Image (cartoon, rainbow, N blue to C red; front, side):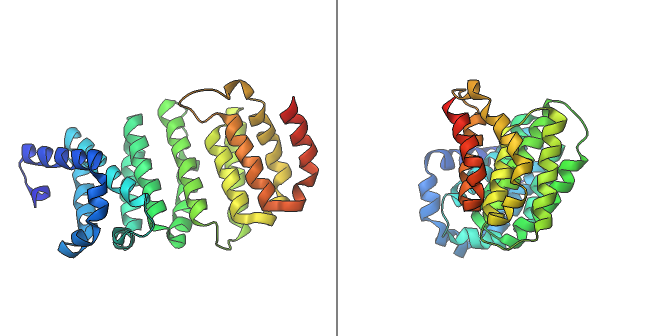
Length: 276
């Protein structure tokens, strides 16, 4: 196995080859899934690739690219055998990748680590893992005290991962304590920033999807922040960034479907805002 080779140049060449395969021939990977699983346990490869993240910077960077490419492929299909194989050890893998994400000082690397995390959650679709992980992320989010570009990016990625967890949990019956905890976290974050951001609004949207009619109990708490998001109409055509107003509109749509008739008091206000 070339991933076990101690020669740096062999490792770099092997990982570069994997990157090129996934970049140009991802369909080959998806078509060969059964053969790969028969040859060797799939999660063994992931374990080896994850271990390489501790190597020198270039090898670690290549390993991260390969891991992201693999999970990108897996998250694009809901029936792949690898997805099931990967599920056996997904929580330890999530913890390991999360550790690298929190220790990274490079925004691009942090984004890639969290993309892997969200891919793993999406492809495994395990509610028990998503529930444990979202509780873990709440603690991690609360522990961040710095206010700089790196920490702001980290918070945004955590909120995005929370939203991914909520999508996995959308058919589960959950304790409303989670609703209250996440809502307090997001509102507290908005208040500390004196602003709203798309990732926080996504979490509010996800909470409405999961808790459905129960979300009507807290809709008055979240409404001022959604309205504030709609006021950002000047960002509507911003390229390369999810405009806050677009996410706020999606949030209103999800909430209206989730709480049904309880949304009626907000309907007229929403229409007045939209026609201005």
